[in-house]
Length: 104
Image (tube, rainbow, N blue to C red; front, side, top):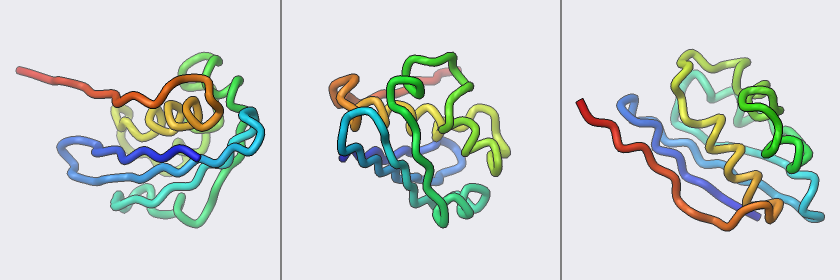
C-alpha cells in the first residue's frame, strides 16, 4: 500500500490518496478529500495498470480521467499526486516527497 497527503495550495483543501497493489501491476485507488468538488470521488474507486498509468502520456491515464469528472481547476495537483502514489504502490519508484516552490 502507498498513501499520499496532498495539500492543494491556496484553496486549503487536503486530499488523501490510498493505493493498494497486490501484484505490483494492478492498483486500486481510493481518496478522501476536503475539496467539495472532489467529494463524490470518495464514494468511488478505480483500478488501473500501474505501468500504463505511470509511463503513459501526461493527462491520458485513468487518474486524470477519474478526476476530470469533478475537477474545476486545471492546476489542481491531485491527479499527479494520484499517479505518483500509484507509482510507489506498484514499486515503480521509491517513495519521495514532491513539492512546488512558487514565488512572485
